Amino acid sequence: MFGLRAVCSIALLVVVVPAGAQVIPIKTIPIAQGDQFQIFPSNNLGLGGVSIALADSVGDPFINPATTARLRGSRLFSAPTVYSVSRRAGGGRSLPLAMLARRATWYGGLALVLQQVDPSRPPQQGGFIAVANAVPPSTAEIPGPDLRAHGNEYAFGMIGRTLPGNLSIGASALWTGLHALDGVDLLYSGSLRVKQTGHAVDLRMGAVKEWPGERGARSLEAIVLHNRFAATHSVLFADRVWDPGLQQIVSQLRTDHNFDHTNTWGGQLKYQVPLAPPGWRIGWMLTVNRATHPKLPNYEITNVAVIPWDPGRSYAFDLGVGLSKVLGPATFGVDAIYEPISSYTWADAMAPTTTLGGDTIATGGKTVENRFRFSNAVFRIGAGRDINLEGSPKMVGLQVGLTMRSISYRLLQTNHVELTQRTLRTGWFEWTPTWGLTLRFPELELRYRGRVTKGAGRPGAQFVSNFREFALAALNLIDVNTSTHQISLSLPLH
Image (cartoon, rainbow, N blue to C red; front, top):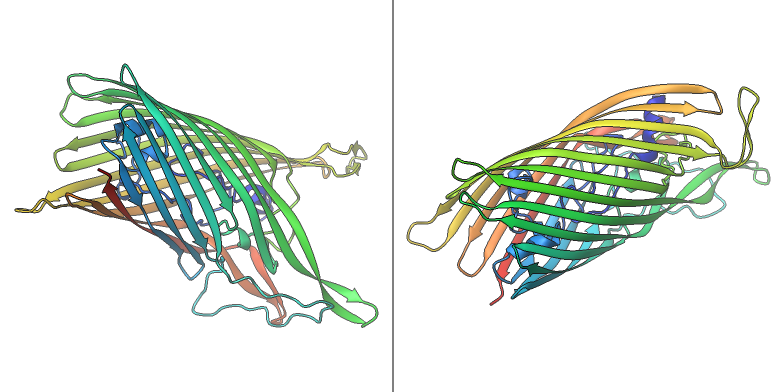
């Protein structure tokens, strides 16, 4: 149990990204997160998210702005998206409106997204909901949980140009105003409510180079990005203290301010080559991230507060190969990715600290050091088929897919105060079935994409003493599923 408490410091390292995996997520506990950042339309979502050797005609411009050069004409998009966590543990809704336009060699795009995120709740079990209904007397009014949905706002802009020699370059910016991150309010055990405020900025430069050939075009895609994420969690607690005047234990309100800051620099290269058999392509991908964590929240996912891990840094890599076949109405794609990650965090001494050996750690010195080594793997596969309706210009497209993710890591923790060193090895497996349906008409395209993620959980509620004390059990994770449904509409602008 010690090892699991130790990793709570970056249990939910959330980095805002518009789509794709150019910013590699880091998770140290199998906590389920809703798909609140699946805000833009994607054609390949129903194919398991296959992307290395298979272009996404709808989603690629929001990932690499230079791929907008492949757009045949201006289009207007909307992709209402709904996600939910099973056992009534949370959910959210997004309503984006986007436009991609092209004129001569120039192209650009704008998008606005409004989002509501429901408050997270401990998963219900057997229809019974644990409620802390025996609060001790208080010197102040004790507020109940905040059951309101909170909103986030997103604004996206992009511009680019096609240059001679089949070269395209583009730049994009995504700004996010955050008031709710799904699942964060469950990570502070015993809190009454969590107020979240923050913002994120994602800046990207992209380029695409194509070399036409007899079997099709070879292509090289490149992205350089900078992502800045900053959030504040104002956590309200009711502490039980002894009141000498009343001669009894009362509740006293306390607000803790936790900061979650991460700055990421990243880059990605993708290279695709057509193969001799008609329709087949093979691709390779390399993604590199360097993230610094000036502040990490002091999550209290157990009944015992976690030692604060103030600064830290991480290096993450994606090494992948993909294969695809697009021949006539049939589409097939598969990705295999190896994901090594190293993360180093530490705790700073707030004052001179004496060790068990009698030495003194000066203010600002390291009291605890955590070294993580991840060896993750991702596998995606998907297939689709377009069906022409006989005697009609309409077309129906069907998609099925599967994403599998294996997360495995080793933690080496050195405590310079207690003069101890401990090791933890752990991991888990998540899998996501996907599906899709497309209706194409001469004047519009209507897409439905869905997926459900299994293999993760959320902290459950339990009573610990005589129906009077209520807390989140130490990593009592209850299995839940996260379901996402997206309906996108694409209209050509003539």
